[in-house]
Length: 333
View 1 (cartoon, helix red, strand yellow):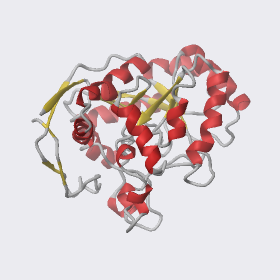
View 2 (cartoon, helix red, strand yellow):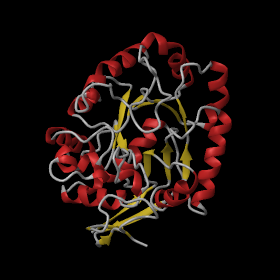
View 3 (tube, helix red, strand yellow):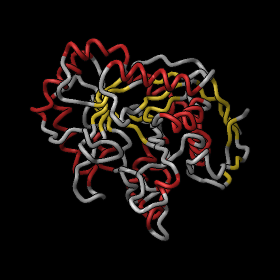
């Protein structure tokens, strides 16, 4: 069995910088024709020069691969119309992080109040710049995404012309939000389609499956699977592939993030094939994103087949999901 994917996209990707960028960027550009690149570097990407410089470093890291880095800005409520008009052609979206909620988000928004955010969000709405959100409160870790739902509702109601992307959703509550408002969309990761909290901490703790938002309950995973496998038109693949060196994952104060970039498409193909819905994979990993973001990515083709692949133990200092194991599908070389 095989499938040919046209212009596969990863609409939520962490590439980091410096040596880590050089290690992980080619592992995405080998599979995908483009990706929405997250801006939470240190310091975060907050102006036009930083966007252009970071994009240049990404292009240098991927070499000759056909790959478009779709860039993002780290949301600040001080952005003016003149600034956003100037940077509009260099970005695809603006990413909002609640302060301190995930990796390198300390400079995020401290008070998620609609009226405080209104000036910037209204400008974004006018300029048709999508807003991507890491949607978690600072409450009990299993409830954080569900507690964020009223904020999504308030934003959707206040800015009906603003495209709002709920990033890496993990709950049935977020899935239900998709059909409630025309301007709300979502990305779903590979790992949240596969694991629950039991897989992370139900036995021996597995640090390489620890991520934020944390994996949830079985019923949440089933809700995610339902919309992903059926290629709901408002969901798209976003890996949230988040590399950390081994010493930061296997440590006290384990860094949050699952590294899936090298195996994402083969594992997705196996998952969709096992459910008899392989034909829906094209929409989940490409067509939906093109429609939601109104983009025309580079034209590429990637053939996946049900030939087993052995996953390396590590890529430089980064340990991937399924490290050292065999998965059922692979990329045809």
